[in-house]
Image (cartoon, rainbow over all chains, first blue to last red; front, side, top):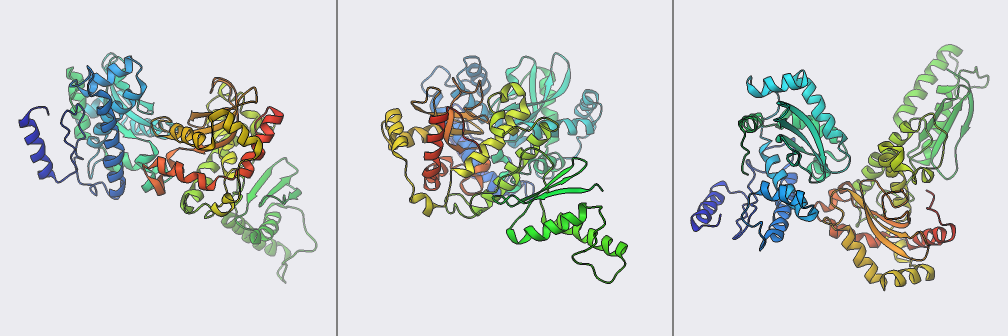
Length: 236
Length: 302
């Protein structure tokens, strides 16, 4: 986004999509627009939740991360590079904001209106079944991870390139499983209370169930797996 | 059915404990005083297998069918009205005020859900974890909570923290009539310079960047008993737990900054929730907490 052409494209994209779009001059990290309108995930996730979650929480992580990156050697690097470097440097403040920026950008794409259900027959479904025994077992494990992440955290489906299989894991705070060797996230679910409180209050279990039933964008997950197995990661 | 051995209705709490000769216990929490007596009656009728000779509501039906009627009605009444808690050492305490008492600073739906759902779940879970073990006050589980395991740390901590939290708040009108004692003021000035400086430090510690995710902020008396410290703790940890802070400390004031504590009214605006919260702090309770912990070198009971 550092060239004039880049600016121009970004502005045009913002106008065309009519979504909130933050275009920063020297912003290393961008706030992507939602891939759908704010009411698109209703009644599973309400428009007010998406407005606050995207326009306030996600936006704040991006702004804070950028202010911490500006003027440092990290400027211009990819989000993933900064995430991994801040993790290794044990720079908790920077890591929290960069990782949360990545996590949320990934999360929006993991959902779509009229999503959920079962993935189409193919590489992803086959690997889920062989990794977990059945698709139902995967759903149970993933829901369990989401429901038992105490406090604020995330549930993940990851590809482990060493074991050549899929695994479910959960993280706390901003933590992202890509910080571990051989691990590539392919699906995530936010279980910080802000992700579901306006719609479900204390009933996280219902949010988790609905996420699996009605929201998961399996095409995106399948693409992520393809890329992970092919050896390159997506630039967000 | 086993035989009823006792029915206790503790005065301070709107709760009934019913004991049976097989060791079974039921706790019923009432929603209001009016319900208490009718619940006691129905609970007795439901639980008792003893033939009663002077039934309270017997009509002209045969004894067997009438008892069946009353038992089923009693059961229905008990189910509908009571919020039965699994038998265990710990009970969900009532709020010392109505759900709407802390308006407009903490909203009614939040108080209701926070107390009736979140806190209630911690109570149920710590009861499950301590089932069959000797009963000890929840305060006594705090010191070794980390060693005892996640259920003690998360649910035991959750129960203590919330019971502590409710007690230190009151309606804005009542709160306005309270103020820090001479002892507390002296400690505040010594530790932070002034009340304003303490509040500023507290609010900084309560910011989303400082307690990242779920947690609490505490004003605690240090081990030595001569200074106040402000700390943030993650999840349901508290300064009474060995290994959480640099040294075990004794909270006199605490604030829940889990999103469930403020999200319905404030959403992402945690700083606004925190600065508004001072309006409902009951300094009388904080004063007595302070006096107690300094004198006894121990945490406040809840």
